[in-house]
Length: 179
Length: 286
Image (cartoon, rainbow over all chains, first blue to last red; front, side, top):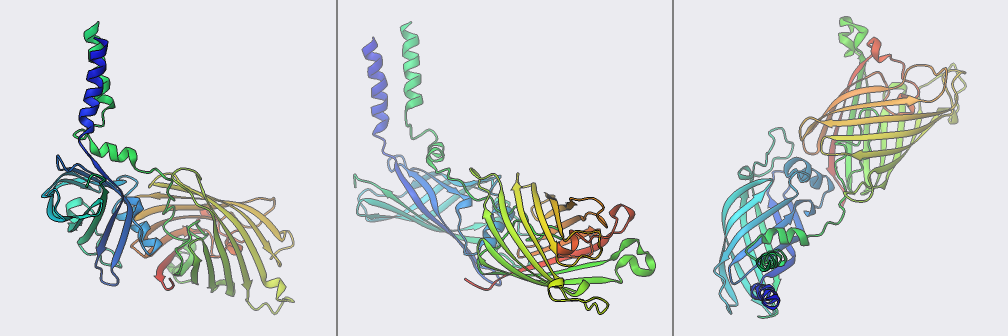
């Protein structure tokens, strides 16, 4: 009996171990907002993602405070006034990425699921592509985010007008030794 | 007994399993780095009311600050509650580095030119340092003509050194303490010493993301000091690059060598000056 219990324990572990989950450690996220006086760009190299090519499940996690701007004051306003990053420290996507073809060097993919920004969750459908490079999968997408959808306020009394939609670019690299 | 063991084993197996269907998100959260981050936006402006805040702008930032203090509110309707009189400070400050700012200003009252160097010594972090510390050394020249006195250049000089210590507790509350040393080469009355120590206290309470209430008080150490301790209450509004600060204070001067030792108004008697600081940030350098 003892042996069989142990067997169950290890078998369960071994079974689930075969579901290969790929991880991306230093994902890149950039957003771009065109504004009247000057365009606003910020980059984040601290985003993380997990992707399971067998089940198509994927999650992306982006720490808001790690967006870097070329002006210190912009970073402060972004965190304090728009994203309220002390209350909502992360943005995430949770869902599936379908369209990945095993062995293809490039496949069109669609991410479908739930995106959370500024504490607000929305159902999204984002087209992108998956490129195979050496031992890695490169996942890329460019999409628009309407600030209104995530309750990000643009105050009326602003010196610098900010666009209602920002363009988000993401690029995640998943190392995959089995490719 | 065996079924209990089996149950516990299965439970353990499921708990310890890296099951992908279960929350991948929690897995990511657990692996994300929790490095300490600098705490930003302790105060909206580089000023709180009359005095400096710990804030230093980013490298290459030029800040233009225009400040007014009107006459005393209790001077009555004939004087439009002080609005007939105004003294003005025109100021510029430039950030050489993210942590180092130099500034220049000119005050209409007593025709004082002031300059300062301001450096961030310690940055508050989410983990680690609980406070930010900024050092300010202020140097000013009183240029009002005083033909009745033998004024030499040395007698016109005044120095103030301050260690500003601030903590942002949350997005609502920030508190700052300002131990200060004032030295004036010439003092107005014989009973005053050339050296003066003071402890300033200030706070900001946010009402919304862009509007906050501020308060600032400087306690002077010593006995038989003339005048009053400087006190100010204000409201600040930030509009992305601009900071508007409207305040009520018993001080008439806007440089620390002026308002710390030489505040003459009694706040609680209505010797209150309405005033404002308007600042605008420009990125001029890389």
